[in-house]
Length: 408
Ligand SMILES: [Zn+2]
Image (cartoon, rainbow, N blue to C red; front, side, top):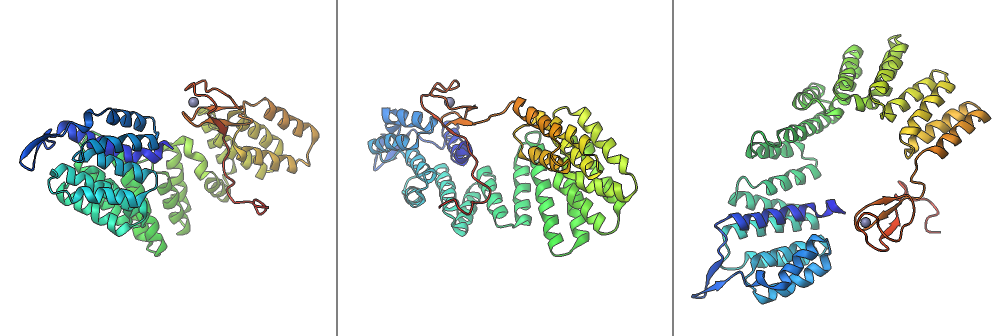
């Protein structure tokens, strides 16, 4: 829910900052030969009330109050701009587009207002799925303000959605250039690294192995923690017959990100086995499990490895250790069931599993507060976190596949 509002909020915040800081915002404006006070609408109680509702995420009330404030002064561009954004967030894209286009047609708006109205329009078009028109709007913003971060970021996302990774990469570099060098550099490199990885996958799909390799290597060089690039680079090397090179890359992933080790567990398990180093896997993953007491995935990988090696009792022990750390992962329970079946449902082993499951700290019947997202293991009538009444609903994930008889 919070994430849905991020584009709106970031645009709003930027806009309001722009107003506070910019001399572009004229408090008084010459209108048909007389100075009018543009503060009028903002001093209306409806404006303040509307902003309060906005902060509380109550969009309908915010729209109602801000519409009243806008009626006090039709010249209050920023209020109309916000109203348009609120309609967009509610899914009324047509209405949002109309409002933002009307702002652009006003004869006397400042360059700053013009730029932000275009930015809002671009967000409307994006939300409505009008990709070409969104591109146009953001392009227009950048012509007015070449370093506009919001427009660059939106353009990058548009390119990503169309799988145009090279273009997305170009825009991201533009963004990195505009940013202050010491700020968010790591984040820029990280995103560039993921885009390099996508370029590598694109090269793979056209069977250009040398280009793919180069992209994966550049990705790792940009950011040592871009996990998928290690997987892909290792796979390319393995498929080219360079098993030692592949193992080196996957071990490198574990050295950079020990808690991501499970990602390469199957690959390394097979490789060690083929090289006659069966012990290497257990040695490596036991060390990871010891160094990271909360790493249930490393324990699960060990458990699987032990079951494959014909040691179901060891495997069960390890699976129960994983279960204690994260009892909510269905993966762990499924691994335990596989082991119990392998043990022909040996009664003592089944009892060990049942006891461990019962003693684990579970959200047995998870509920969530609609207002503040507080989680509870049962239905509550008053939220202990935000103190709202009757705000809890069952916290249930939709089935990954709709079941056959769901509408029976
Ligand atoms: Zn709450």
